[in-house]
Image (cartoon, rainbow, N blue to C red; front, side, top):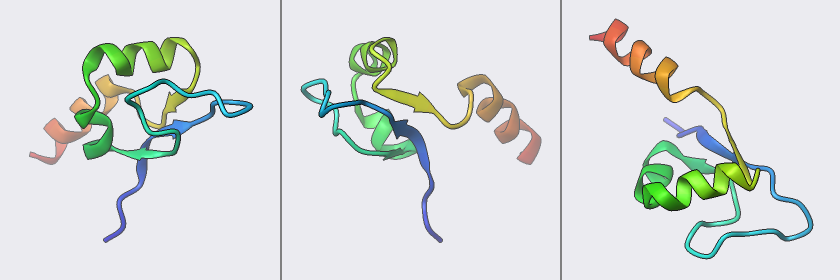
Length: 64
């Protein structure tokens, strides 16, 4: 089964943050990025999350 991206790369003009791949990232890849870098990447609008983190936690609880 293919993994879908959790964090979609939306950086423009080659913008990137060192330590974070400049491409769409799966949930596992996004989780592997240190929290401070994830927060900064979102602040800089380099990525957008495809699912709100709160929503994804609720979905997991519903499945269990």
